[in-house]
Image 1 (cartoon, rainbow, N blue to C red):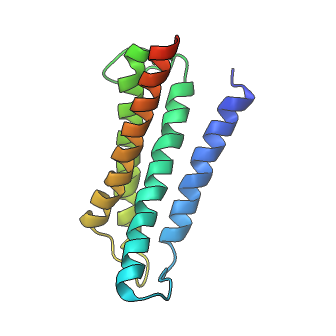
Image 2: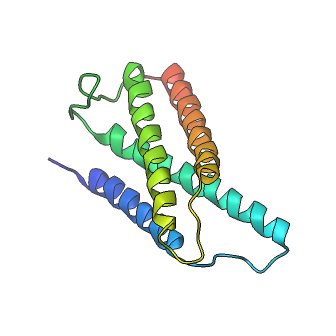
Image 3: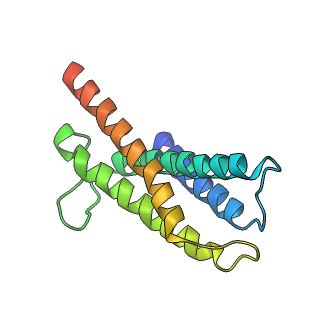
Length: 144
């Protein structure tokens, strides 16, 4: 049913989600640098970690051969189905960002906030655009 690539994709996604959860569980992640530099670095880290999450989620959803999703038929590896697979990865990542911010409200010294979800969404959308452009380029050069 599943091949090694499928297991690897699931493992990487779950592992990355675990890293995000672990980092969100830390009461203080300040770098010790100047306040403004630290702030920028932490927000850039948010963007990067959620961009990676979106890419990994996309790999999992793309790898699914015939799983029924709501609002549509089976997901296949075709260009015409690419938007649906990518949208599921984006929605998944945004929901995880929301749950991560909620999780932070229970961690001493951390605050969950909508502004961080928006910053995470920058990484999510950037990854989505990158994936879309790469997929379109591949489809124009050969069969996807």
